[in-house]
Image 1 (cartoon, rainbow, N blue to C red):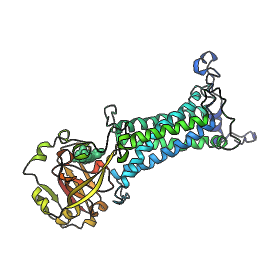
Image 2: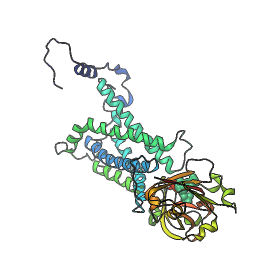
Image 3: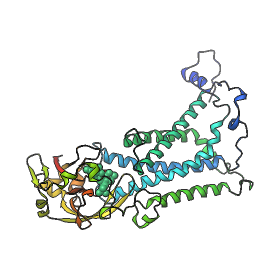
Image 4: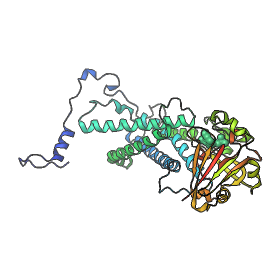
Length: 413
Ligand SMILES: Nc1nc2c(c(=O)[nH]1)N[C@H]1C(S)=C(S)[C@@H](COP(=O)(O)O)O[C@H]1N2
Ligand SMILES: [Mo]
């Protein structure tokens, strides 16, 4: 900060703010300086600014990747007028969401190591030198708590354990993500000079003394990396089928469930069992000019197509399967609408519930792989997989693959 020569004039607003921020705050009496607040309470020679900066870079990469893939998932589910998400490659969403959950899980050991490397600073004495220091510490408190909130809520979601979350998971997770990313940008901005110095050659530190129990800083970094690898291997099998047996920590295995596929919501818990089994079932296709009612026999009369497409649950599991049924675009054409200029609201028999309906945007309506499926892996659709018929489209979150269809509302766009 450049000090202005004393001109005898009244200080300007910036200068007054600077003074206010940097005037010393009273230090608490020294008799409160006990336990972890004592000078020299933390002696591990393994902590260093360099280690903290290196862990910070790994965390920054993991968090940003997680943030971007999370935004993709959010905007597919809550599209704005500008949102465009293609239907190909068919596995695109499977990859982005797999990366989202994997990087989120990888941040757990990384954040653990990083917090370990800096937590002695929690007991800095005096707790706040001046107001600027107090604000900086408060911003770190926001960063740490928001990051922990994301990890905990993400984990609870992967575990399908919504009980401890008295709020709507997706909104809370989405808005807190912005808080975390904003706090990270601020934090990196504030610490940039220290990060630079710690990572430059001048910042290189002497090797850790061997008195540290044999573990060196490099060893600690390798251990953090190994923990990331272990967490990844123990969970990635929920979406990468060949390693599904290694997925000891993943709550789902992609190959367990009726017809070889997991079930997220059963017909019973959705309250649709009777309607789904009703022999008088008809699928209603409502267009702007005309509507049709199709029985299961009518649907079976239409040209049938077989496709191999994954279900990719936002919770992190995904599984490929073979589906047979009628092309959505054929049904749209049946009510006299051009599939290339339409979107479809797919409504289930469910009376309520978050995922009772979904919207299919134009790229997915036009797409020949998008089916109203009647069969799964060669058998008539299991009631828990959406019997009498369900939507299945490429590169789309599982929550939008609506089961137990009652009505398709076709709209021209
Ligand atoms: N009507 C309806 N369809 C639904 C759901 C639902 O709750 N109701 N859950 C969705 C979710 S979250 C997923 S991941 C997929 C899972 O399909 P599956 O149970 O056949 O594997 O179905 C989707 N379709
Ligand atoms: Mo899901």
